[in-house]
Image (cartoon, rainbow, N blue to C red):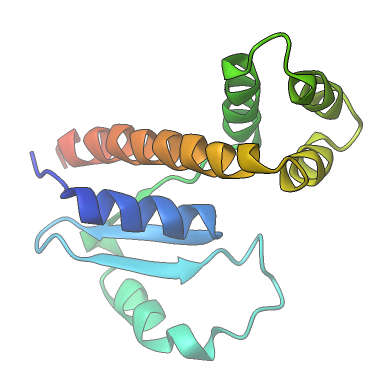
Length: 145
């Protein structure tokens, strides 16, 4: 089984978090990142013509590292809230945000206005994204064709 470097794991996690799709070339180990057309239907893909052609011409040689589903992202947010002490007022605000009609939007608003906890959230999320990448890569790299 192939393994990833910490740098690769970090890059893949960041790209996935930014709304890119990640494809791993099974033979040479290269990665190709392209915008997700479902998340960004109006994006100009001209900047990714080379990457798109590589995928189109050799799609069978690539496996995709799946993005998080919204339920997975929600779970990460809820897990972060669980790390906060019960005496922290932010915890109550984030719980309320997660129970709102638009939890992702509300959570982002609350966390963006949370001072030092904003960076703690980003660190937590980044760690969990990297764990996600390791798990997904382990799954796709161990599947025999």
